[in-house]
Image 1 (cartoon, rainbow, N blue to C red):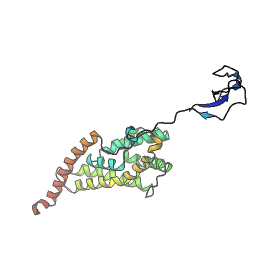
Image 2 (image 1 turned 90 degrees about the horizontal axis):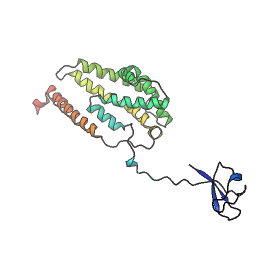
Image 3 (image 1 turned 45 degrees about the horizontal axis):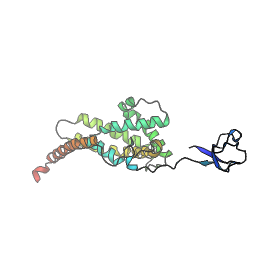
Image 4 (image 1 turned 90 degrees about the vertical axis):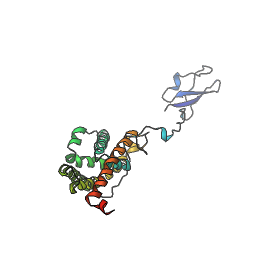
Amino acid sequence: MNEFKVVLCPVCGKENHINAESEIDDATCEFCHAQLQPGSEQPVVSLTAPPKSVDPKTLPYSSMRPFWYVALMMMMTIGLYRIVWLYRSWQILNQHYKLKNNIIFNIWFDPFFSFRFFKYAFFLGKECGYKPFMPTIIYPILYFIFLISVAVSSRISGNEMDWYEIGMVVSLALLLIPIHGAVKAINAGHTVIEPDTQMRTKLSAWSIVFVCLGSLFWLGFTLSCLEYFHVIDKI
């Protein structure tokens, strides 16, 4: 913002706009070129044009995502979207707190870095006014338990429907409980960390593709469940 002093010319009486940091002794009138006198300046004013109103719909999208978006993509990609969400979240935390984390390494060994991740996520949330509905220490514990449950169940599950596959799906759904807290905490800093951006309110083109592919899995899973519990035979 450029600020100026309004100085009246002692000869022609016209207003001259002098930079607020300039000395009056060296200034001359821009109209009659007479020497301006100290003490004739008026209060400092700003000549900056008022900011133009910006349509929020034209702002670029933030790297953050609302919880419904994260939850939908988590379920439709059978948990793979967690990698995308974690990568973006670690980027935000690294930048905000000047951390030296290797993001790929942290994601690869995610269960062991979950406590550190949630620690800084809730630090950010607290700075921006977010209050979790559970003690913050519970979130990484739940995250660790449900993440391990998903990993173990997916490896034990066979080619056909069994209880391990059902356990994997249930664990994946329960994993959204601690993720919900982290998403809300990080998103609380949206306007601070990424100003002049907007949060997505609809799926991107690639997200729609993965939702369609994921729908095929859930259709097959539902039919397998009906067959496993002999529901189809009773219809």
